[in-house]
Length: 305
Length: 118
Image (cartoon, rainbow over all chains, first blue to last red; front, side):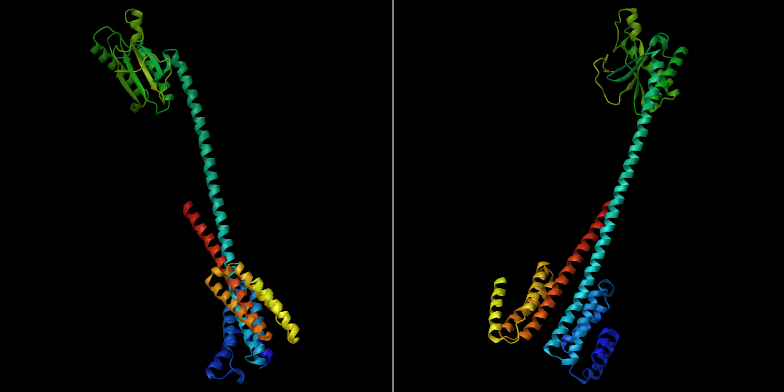
């Protein structure tokens, strides 16, 4: 067996197996000479393993270097059988095959790392994009909401303006208070609405519907001090309920509007004069503020009904 | 290590002067030593498989030094080659373990991020 033959044998794993298998099966040393050293046996096996591994694709130069080392070892074995030098070369060849496999492992791990890193960055980008989209949507919704608000304010102020021709409108700690004169709404001692009152209340209903749905409305009836306190309470409540019923009929949601009879307890003027009593006979429609504001110009707090 | 090398170097030059025959493998000694240092530097000590081959390399180096003292220069050179091969392997194995660790950490990060996003 000359050097070139031994090289081609070592290169081809198949041929190597065949040669090894034969020599083992026949119980004969290869080519009738000394059996290969443990180093050479190990070098051949390791190289075979390496050549079947990923090293072929990932680190071809390292695998080639391992092959050349094995060829050198085979050549030395043929020349000088199991000399120290031959065994050393085989030892080195075996290590080189292991190094090629480790090199393939390094490359494979690096690829895995790069793939994971790319996936990580893509995920981050997706997350960032999603939150950007969400933010854009929110801002869009906000500006729509602002527009809707401005629209409501406009309708409200228009409604209030028309209301001010027939009623007193003021803001106090309770909210927006629309005061209607009792003499316009009712006959003396009666709780049913006068026909002329209905026109006015329709305007009030329009104005109320312009407000946010979440603002509560209280219809508070008030009397002057003539008559008994209890009958005044009853009368003021009956009148408030009449007004409430009319407003509900005119489209104000019944859930947000309530009626309250305050009797003679919350006068706004002196009951001793006819003019004062006329001012005290009134219905207040209170649109409650979103939050209780404490404006100092409040006439009287709504207490003890 | 450095002191030992220097001493060895000194004794080698004396030996060369005395015998004038085959020269001690100073070049291979340097090669093997630097291969061992490189393996140590990448932390071969911390990876079991790499540590095993690093130990083999050191053992070969010690044996080679003994052979040099006995003026068995040819055998010493061969043992030093074994030392170099084992040191190189220790380095490759250590780097492989590190690369695997980094890849696994990166994949864990991806999984964690995926869980957060969902």
